[in-house]
Image 1 (cartoon, rainbow, N blue to C red):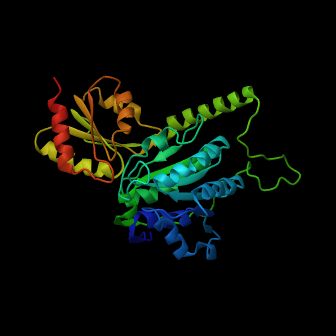
Image 2 (image 1 turned 135 degrees about the vertical axis):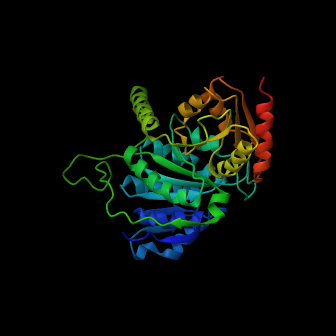
Image 3 (image 1 turned 120 degrees about the vertical axis):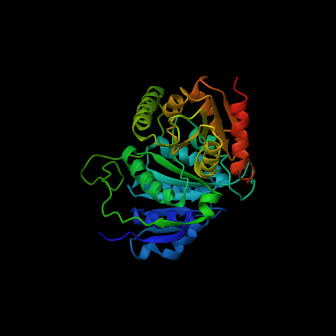
Amino acid sequence: MAEKEVKLMKGNEVIAHAAIRYGCDGYFGYPITPQSEVMETLMELKPWETTGMVVLQAESEISSINMVYGGASTGKRVMTSSSSPGISLMSEGLSYLAGAELPCLIVNCQRGGPGLGSIQPAQSDYFQMTKGGGHGDYRLIVFAPDSVQEAVDLTYSAFETADKYRTPVVILGDGMIGQMMEPVEMPDEIAELPEKPWATTGCGKGERRIINSLYIEPDVMEKVNFRLQEKYRTIAQNETRWEEYFIDDAEMVIAAYGTTARIAKKSVKELRKAGIKAGLIRPITLWPFPAEAINKAADKAKAFLTVEMSCGQMVEDVRLAVNGKAPVEFFGRTGGMIPSWKEIYAAAEKALGGVK
């Protein structure tokens, strides 16, 4: 068996490499720190000379998301990438993509906000990605990698689930994942992509194909919404992912995702050295959210601590999942500041000490 190719790469760079190997037909984007290396790497690799992949810098984020809509409508495997304020500009297009049921990949390498904010890492786009951003009753599948290797692996998962369910999928990273370098095992190239009989490739003598999200009659629009909600229930049943770390006997459960979860693991180790039964639940999919796993952990836990690089967003979903079984506290750094393991350790001690 041939050995896998291992390279030292940034998160942004490796997403670009993975996209080519996973059969991406088109990338449409606009530069913004801290994710610009995705497009820069694609330009350097020149995949149009090898796989035929289109790589295009659009006039703006609004242009790029509409190009994604057009490419996806023809059945092509397409993607874009941006960072927080750029994703805000794309929000209308995200709703259109969901409404038209078009599979695609959106990479959001989060930075500090609100407004133009900072160019440092943050996790303050959780609400935007998991609960809307655009208008209407829609959902986005949201993957949150905690390492450069997982950014590679989840790029594959994102493309596959997007095609499987005909829906937009997000990889929600942050400036740390995008910029830090780690050794990664490069994936094999995909030989075949799934057929898309719904795509607008020219019907010839066949049935007419239309990509649309406009329904004038309210009863028709309601039926479309009911069908979409049924699809989202199926996704929630089949695609929820999470990681458990020392959860079986945990009395203090830390909930964190992405790079914050990596830091929290160190805190869990140190808490256990001090005799505190700590554990970690890391959602890998932020939507669908692993509510059942968290609720199950609450059967034994005395307290929860949610840690984020924000002022507190995922903590609301953790509280809903715990459903009153145990107190849920929050610790966060924001604006581009990164929590240390010692700060998380102290916050966990405080949260557990407040339990009567």
